[in-house]
Structures are given as C-alpha cells and as structure tokens.
Length: 242
Image (cartoon, rainbow, N blue to C red; front, top):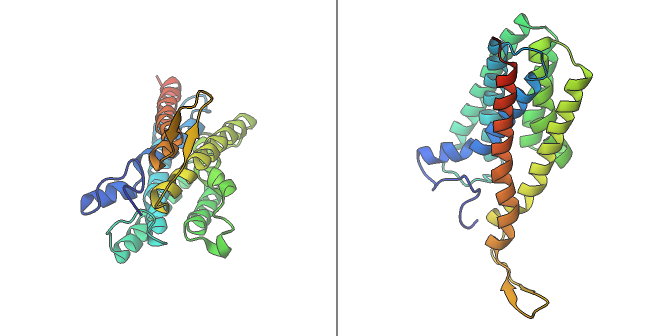
C-alpha cells in the first residue's frame, strides 16, 4: 500500500485510525439513505428516525467497518485486532438493543429488518460463503436499498410502492458509489506502478499516473456523498412536524 488508503484517511496511528475506520463520508452517505427513506412518510416522527439512524450508525458505521478492517486490514490501521472485534460486537449489540426498542414502538415486523441486517453485515464484510455476498449487487442492497427501506418502515410500519421506488434509487446510487470506488481503492491500496502516455490529435502528450486515474472517480465520490447528505437533510426538513 502506498499513500493514503482513501481520500478521507488520516495519517496512521492513534485516534486518527478510528476516524479512518469510520469512513466518514460513506457512513454519512449511508445514514442519508436512511433519512431519505424516512422522508417518504407524510410527516417525520423524530424519535423513530433518531432510533433508526443510531442503529444503522452502530451496525454499519462502526460494526461493519470494524469487521472489514479485521478481515484483511484494507485501511492499514494500527488498531489491535481485539479492539476491532470488541467494537464490532459492542456496536452490533447496541444496534440490536435499539432495534428491539424501536420494534416495540413501531411494529414487531421490524425484527425482520434486524434479522436481515444482522446477517448481511458479517456475511458481506467477512466474506462468508466464499464471498458470495461480497459483490456489487449486495453492496447496493446493503448500503443503499435496505437502509432506505428500513428508514421508511420505521416511520409508517408499512412498505408502500413509493418507498420501494425510493429504496431502488438509493440502491442504484450505492451501486454507482461501488463502481467509482473500486478502481480508486485498487489504485490506492494495491498498485505500485502506473505507466503510460495519452497522445492527442495535435501530437501533444500527457503522462498517465495513479493520481490522474483517480482524479475523476474520486472527485465524483466527493460530490456525491455531500449531495446525498444535503438531499437527506432537505427532505427531512420538508417533512419535519410543525
């Protein structure tokens, strides 16, 4: 690995490793999809939205990322393995407690979402079943469609057609994120040398470097995560009670 493993990663060591572990832009993007799903409801119920956001932050923002780092150290942090395992267990346990509390207030069908999420987090990040769940499709489901669906359900205890459409859109956004971030991750984490030249019609040339290959997809990712968060805030504000 050369340079930073992600555009938001800080220099390794100490508290900076925990910032990097959270993948802040992508965690906020993920929470944004929860809020976007919740905004399908006529009026936001703040308590239920807060519980959904807290549960997904713990389960995915902390738990999934801790498991991912435990499985292969893609971020190259210096966080001890036992700390990563403890973070994963504690955060997933906390999400479970919040989920049960939320289900008791909204609908016991919410336990089905907990079961699906509780399976997908380790199945994806630990690459269970030979990595069958560690694919672009399941990433789109886990990081886009599923949280939006759960966010909407947390508000109304129903799954309406419009919520399905919004969840599908969030899934497609997550799929775009995956397609953009995969080559960037490869360049940052596994490539040691990039060689080549672009020759234009007028005969001028331009060298191909790892930085030039990363620039467009990484710039798109920087804009997309902000766009999703701002969209989520705007939609929630439009549905806020009073």
